Image (cartoon, rainbow, N blue to C red; front, top):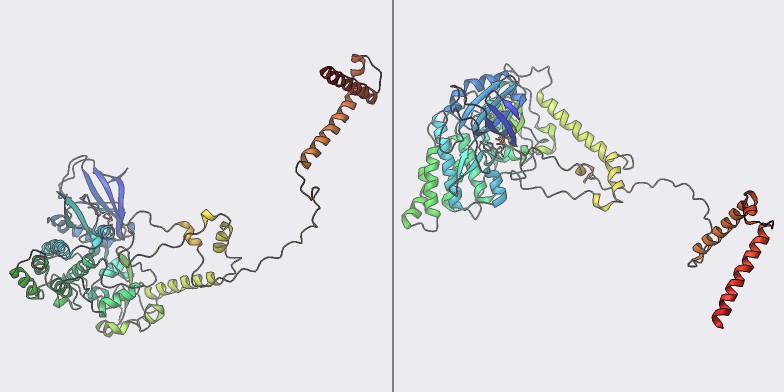
Amino acid sequence: MRPVGSKYLLEEPLGRGATGTVWRARQKEAAGAEAAVAGEPGETVAIKVLKEELANDSDVVMRFLRERSVLLRLTHPNIVRVRDLVVEGDLLALVMDLVDGPDLHRYLRENGPLTPVAAALLTAQVADALAASHADGVVHRDLKPANVLLKQDDGQMHPMLTDFGIARLADSPGLTRTHEFVGTPAYVAPESAEGRPQTSAVDIYGAGILLYELVTGRPPFSGESALEVLHQHLSAEPRRPSTVPEPLWTAIERCLRKSPDERPSAENLARALRVVAEGVGVHANAAQIAASEGVAALLAPDPDPAAVPGSADPTQVLPQGAASYDPSAATSVLPHTSAGPTGAADPTAVLPSTGAADPTAVMPPMPQHQPEGQPRPDEPHPWQNQLRAARDRNEQTQVQAYLDPGEDPLRRRPQRQVARPQQRPQPRQQQPAPGYGPQQRQPQQYPPQRQQYAPAPQQPQQPAPRPQREPRPPRQRSANPMKIPGLGCLKGCLFTIVILFVAGWLVWEFTPLQDWIGTSKSYWHQLSDWFHTVSGWIGDLGGGSSS
Ligand SMILES: Nc1ncnc2c1ncn2[C@@H]1O[C@H](COP(=O)(O)OP(=O)(O)OP(=O)(O)O)[C@@H](O)[C@H]1O
C-alpha cells in the first residue's frame, strides 16, 4: 500500500481519467487543521492522484495551492466533498469522500436511458450543485455523466457532482504553452472549442448535453473525429428525438444554445426541470401540464454568469485532435490551434470544407503577433509538430499496408496461427456509440494483443506468392503396397526368430554351454535332436490322448 502524505494509504485504483487516477484509500491518522475534514484513522476515502505531468507543472501546483480554500469550502448535498489536498514532492492529490455507487456514464451503459421524469429530476439536482458552485465563482468546465457519481441512499440514487475545479487546475499556462486544453469533445461548449472567454454558461451547455444523453442514451453530437464533433457543437442544431416531451426539449434546447448569453442560469434550470418533471409525469394535473408547457418563461438568459478567470484567449480556436479522438474517451487533452482575430470571430473560417480528411487543411495561419508563451514564428508551431507526427503515423500505416505480406511480421503471425483454430484472430468487437463506449477509465483497457495482428482492413489482401518448394525425393515403394493386415507383425516375428537363432549359435559356440550339458554336437545337430525329441513328445502326447 502506497502512502500519500503521512495521513493516507492508497489501497486499490477505482479508475483512471485524463487528469489522474482515483484510488480507494484509508486514513492512517487524522488530518491536520488545513484539511476541511480531519477524518478518523481507518476511515475509507477516495483520493485522486493527479498525473505527474500536472504535478510537475509549477503553474498547476501554484493554482492547486491558491484554490485550496475554494475547493475545500465547496460543500453541497450534490457535490462530492473534497476533504483535503496533499502536495508532497511530485505528488498532488485530492482527498474526497468515497461515493459508493457507479458513475452515471457506467449506469447509463448498463441500464439504458432514463425516463423523461427521472432525467429531469436528476439533472435538476446537478443544476442545484452548479448553482451553488457558480454562486461561489467556481465553474466546473467538464460536466459529463462520468463526473456524476450515483450515491445509493435508502434505495434511491443521489447524484453527486465530482471533479470540480480539475479542468481549471489542468488548464494551466504550462499546458496552454503547448496549445492544449482539457475537455471532452462530446460535452465541450462552442465557446470553449473556439477558445473564446468562458463563463458558467459552459456548465449549462454541459448540463444540456447530459440531459439529452440521459433521455436518449447518447450525446447529441457525435462523429468520427474530435474535429467533426466540435464542428457540430459550433454549427449543427440539435434535433428533438420523438421520445423527448416538448417541455423537456425546451429546457434542453435552451441549454444547448450556441450563444452562451442565451442560456439560463443553473438556478433557473433546476427550477424549470422540476416544473417539467411534474408536468410530463403520468399523474400530472392540468395545472402542472400547463406550467410545464410554459417552461420557456423560466429559462430566461442568465444576466450575470460567473466568469472563468483567464479563460479568454482570442488566439486559441478549434482544437484539431482528429488523429487522437476517442468518441467515448474521458476528458481529452486536445491540441489547440491558433489563428488571427478574424479566424476567431468566424468559426467557420478555421474549419476546412474537407473536414478531418485533410489534416493540413485545418492548419490555421500563423498569428502575426505572438503573445508571451506562444511559439515565435521561426519556431515550428506546436500544431505543425502534431500534424507532422500524425502524418508520420499515417505514412507508417500506409507503408505497413503495402508491405509484402510474406515480409510483414504483423501478418506472418496470424498465418502461422491458422493451423490452430482456437488462436485465430477474433473479429473486432463492434464500436459502441460515440461518447458512450466502454469505460476508458478502467486501469487496463488495452485491446487484446492479438487484435494487433489483424490484417489491415483497408487493403484487400493479395494472396502471397507461394515460395518455390524443394523437389521431392522420388517416392519409395511401400513394402506392403496391398496393405495386407498382420504382415508387419509377421515380419517382426520372423526377424525375432532369426535374432534368437543367431544369438543361440553364438552362445553355443563361445560359451562353456556344451561342456555343461555334456555334448560335442554342432549347434545345428543339437537343434535337430531337440526338435525330434520335442516332436516325439508331441506325437506321444497325441497318441496317448487318442488311445
Ligand atoms: N469520490 C469518489 N468515490 C468513488 N469513486 C470515485 C470517486 N471519484 C471518482 N471515482 C471513480 O473513479 C473513476 C475515475 O474517476 P475520474 O474522475 O478520474 O474519471 P473521469 O471523470 O473520467 O476522469 P477525467 O474527467 O479526469 O478524465 C470513475 O470511474 C469514478 O467512478
